[in-house]
Length: 400
Image (cartoon, rainbow, N blue to C red):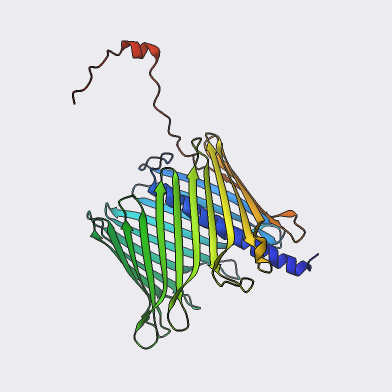
């Protein structure tokens, strides 16, 4: 049996990897929903509001409670989230609160302000950070985004610590280019360029998408050097979707080499069950002799959905760094259940981690109740009744 502290560290590490993998898979599903036609989302427009409260507990973590609210009125939307932890007196104490206000100024202009609050030792809420974003677009598809982040110092005075400017242009009907520059505090009350990125998105004739993003950073001598290149390809074949991402980093001599690779595969059965497999590869560890790329993690997600709710089951497989030839083994798994209860929803999520003896133990459990209405289900058009079919006169064939 492993030492208790060592086992606790292993549990926290695996749990962090699993939760990060859950986030990655969720983002992948969200990207799929954006690219494909969404058929189960509420229709835009109209005022709306809902609240949700979730509680999370685990043997190696302090219980927490998260409260969320969403309000939309006219062209203004406000989303709030407050995180609380269980205090020594047995009651929840506020820790962090985020408020996101979005205003649709015009059809082509949006302004978003994110305010982050914290609580000091006296139990008072204080504004810690503000991020302001202004975005504009044109009918041609071009876009301009400016984002500014200000933080409070020890005296509560705000100063800009980060600024980002991004411009997107359609170079050709199938090529889109985005250039962005990041400025950060230079320690002398000003801002200095800290990063530049160039992203080129190309759409193929077969509906494939290729994205190449190059990141540059200053070398200290007034020049810019390539800090990394990420190349992503997306291919869609019916209900199947494959996304491959390759990340390259410079070596000590500045030459690029492939540092990691991720392959994601999405598929959907005729019954609506969705399956996502995400495999992560990295440069070989000392346990390998060929020095190539080898799989070190696989996350499999299965999503089932019907009129009563949905169930998402996920498992994390990892390669043993000591014995990589053994192949990946399931080290953690999670189950996420959503039930549509009347006008709202109820959710539960359980994370289990396998110990050194091969047994699974619950390390995190979370429940949530929300007044957010369930997504609208698209109903197929009603089939014509026999009487209707008989009453419909036959149509003459169309002329070629």
